[in-house]
Length: 406
Ligand SMILES: Cc1ncc(COP(=O)(O)O)c(C=O)c1O
Image (cartoon, rainbow, N blue to C red; front, side, top):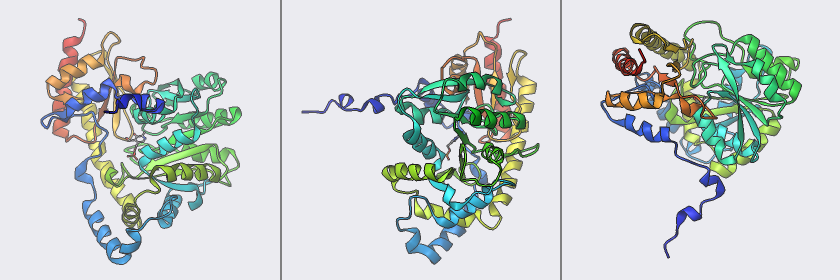
């Protein structure tokens, strides 16, 4: 008898739905389209030669070890390097606090597995990273959204929601995806103070923090939380911090990390054992070889130059082509910016017309956990050349102008 598969799927699998937006985004895969839709780094800045040299060295000097299974926690020299790089004044990270994951996306899934019970409240920014919602939806949480503005998550809105007893707060404080905005220092301090007062942990997702084009670096929420606790011991913390090499070196390596207190790391390790045993040993060896001895910092300087120029070109193109009534964020780093059209417009309609004009973006609705906002759109500026950016923005502006009420 043929298996009717849909009746065999678990409730969890049934909660995994392909979104309308994902289906629409397939349209952007045509080769002649100018796409601002993905979140892809620029392939022309991938350090291909550094990876080539590192791979050769790793295989020549450590071949059998790099091809063997390794500990779930990750390759110790890489964990030590990350601990060193993530330490800030008053926030000393130890290798024991670091777990290597297969992308930050896996860290999000492990967090879902480890923390979320069906019906738990989770506080998320509105809008937030779509991939986090996708990772957590199968665990059946209820999302409570916190409003955001140019200074990031609105801490004024937060206290009221903290009283509902959420399981955790999820926040992308620096060059947020999809908004591109950065949470101010004052708000970061308020966030850690309020979270501490209500005893609610914070999940800090920080893939873009190193891609700063201008302005001062801000302390991570994890470091501020540590300061609040006397600034001595990073193992006692209210924050689970995630970051990745996807945006600074290459997403294809799938090397990312979590920094958390030991009891959280232990649970995440158990969850990871059942998921993939470990992140590929050879990718960890090679990434370590590439990232060490200052190469990472030098390479980041190069990509920041390229992305800063692309951001500038996109902002200038918006200034030049977008009609009155359209507004956008001005990110100081990262890969994205966020555009708002008048409320009577629906950006899914704009998207469909834009694709006919061979240009694409992501309609903002998919980033809102409550699906409530229809007039926003996310633009990626890292993955298109300046010429493509000008042409693409011009085409989209024409679609928007046609839909505007006069
Ligand atoms: C906010 C955020 N978190 C996590 C990820 C996943 O990154 P990774 O490639 O490390 O899995 C992304 C990727 O775009 C992201 O924007």
